[in-house]
Amino acid sequence: MATYPNVNAANQYARDVVSGKILACRLTILACQRHLDDLERAKDPRWPYRFDKNKAERFLRFSQKMPHTSGEWARRKLRIEFEPWQKFALGVPFGWVRKDSG
Picture 1 (tube, helix red, strand yellow):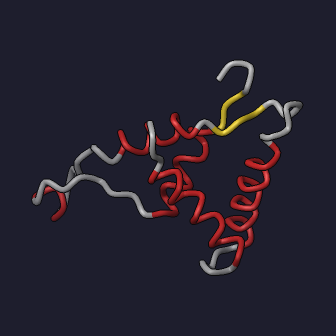
Picture 2 (cartoon, rainbow, N blue to C red):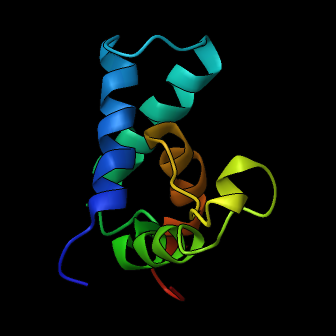
Picture 3 (spheres, rainbow, N blue to C red):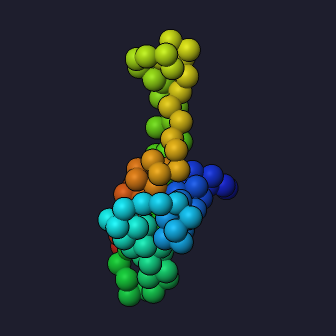
């Protein structure tokens, strides 16, 4: 994949939470800070993890192809569209992989 709009939105969300631009509880701020710190830590060859943008983006793109199954949006045949906080909450766990096994 050449571009990562969903991953970029998730990372921007994390930066905005940590900077205070988006108000969030202490645990959300800590989760966002940990993710941003881990992105930096992943540059160290001794650290065993890396963030695979392709895997995170693939999951987020696939998930947003699913239709709503009930309610007004289902009747209008709309697909699920994640907000930035959802992209962060769902994309981050799918993106972190071990360097040795991917």
